[in-house]
Length: 462
Image 1: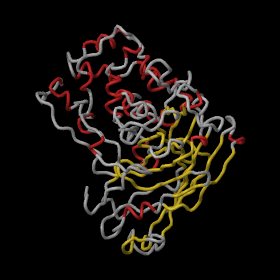
Image 2: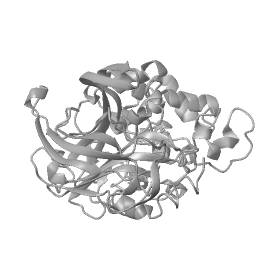
Image 3: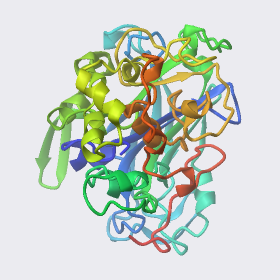
Image 4: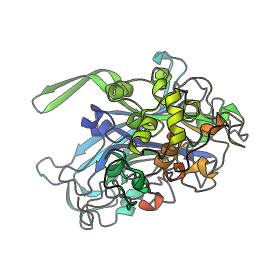
């Protein structure tokens, strides 16, 4: 979770594993949108001597659909290059890493950023503009001796790009919080433990943030809204269809890989191996036998998976694992009714009229994308977003602190079904459906790239 090791194949390829995607109107500038895609799940801070990095053989992409067909109209591509200064030492760094130039850092990464405008389905019509090359990543946060001024090192890796754009790529502290131990132990949600079918099940227990002590590798880019909309405008009306963007991240590998002694050769066209729009979809909605296949498919073909959203397995499991706690949900599940509200939230966006003053519909194409209405300013900080009356929060895009686990679990438990059927009664236990965590489980930065500086291995050993 959110998509950390969510499918069998990608769990063996961490540098291409897209773990989280965030998209939100930047809090310090309502005229810009920040998009963040994370890779390399569950990085132990003390992971030397070969510390974590992006893959030189991976094409990382951020896609934006601005006309509702779930196909990319604007893409930002990122390619990384690793340089070893001294191959005759095992050391990642030969002394304290400092500025200028990240002195004493032996294994360095730089990257390029390319903006692609897609004209149609034919790649030959794409227009590509290279916005930056040789941009530095910061080193991993090793400890007080090797990286004694880490905030300064990281800040030096925030790069300006032409057109008022800003980019960062490097290690950050994991911002996604989740009680993995309870969720994957038969979905024993600690706040509901007294309802659980298997012992021990007498009292609610204190939740544990399983990702509190790990880092991740982030690609973050801040863009003018006009860079992303279909006509280059900055919409101000919430009801304007041009205000809604569909956003997702993806990673690609070339189809052919040949190992020659200690060298891997890559050739052929790029093929998608990982993607992520809405959190938790491949994690808990898509069945095991389709998880790898799902990662290869574009959002425009997601109608083939819609039945798993319309009839989610999790809803049925809640009735089994918490007997008697969800009588109305049990009746709904047994009726075979289509969960139209979940299709709206997760695959279509909410049309006007469902929530007062809000819409983020992208039309009729069922697709896994974050849907962000850029006409809604970055106001509010309620971690349950729309459920808490905060229109700037999830599922209107996704901010780094949004409690997506609680929002999606409560939606699966039927909280929003009355929007479809006013006679439906939400089970009384639903407001307690959560892993019990919140944004206080970790720390964030108030400014770009918003995810906090990574934990270091000296003070936070795994």
